Figure 1 (tube, helix red, strand yellow):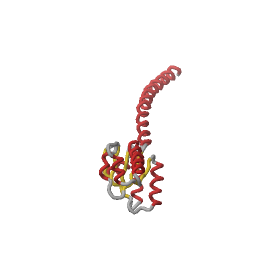
Figure 2 (cartoon, helix red, strand yellow):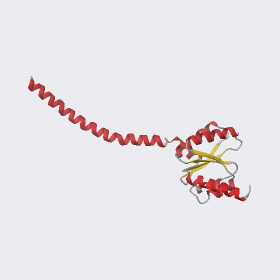
Figure 3 (tube, rainbow, N blue to C red):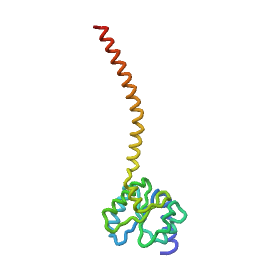
Figure 4 (cartoon, rainbow, N blue to C red):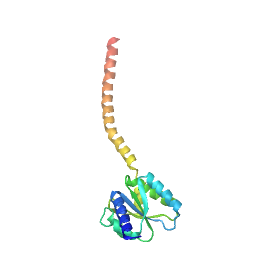
Length: 172
């Protein structure tokens, strides 16, 4: 690999790292290509990508960027899972794949520049996804006006029942 090819790889990894909200560094030593392909498919569905890059090139690409916190931790065989949309979905995909594989391990991650351990990535994977959180928030926001309207409807309904009883009493 010549110098221009290395520079192109560094720039591509740097661009992906800057646009990613999460970068999960994993250990894949000894994994068959078929399993890595399955991981790539799962990550693509979750809005992410998985790349295997030489450690020296990854260190250079991550230097001075958003995910600089994982810069010095590239050792042995590393793969990087980037999450571009929902970091929780990517963490879930990587964590689920870890449970199904004996070889694949999460080393650490960077979420918006903050260093996370493997245990913290697992905790992140347990959180509800972005869509579910938005649904819960909208349900909570909708509950307040709904309860307010129900409260006033019950007050008016009680007054209408009293007026109806007075009308029936005068009619009789």
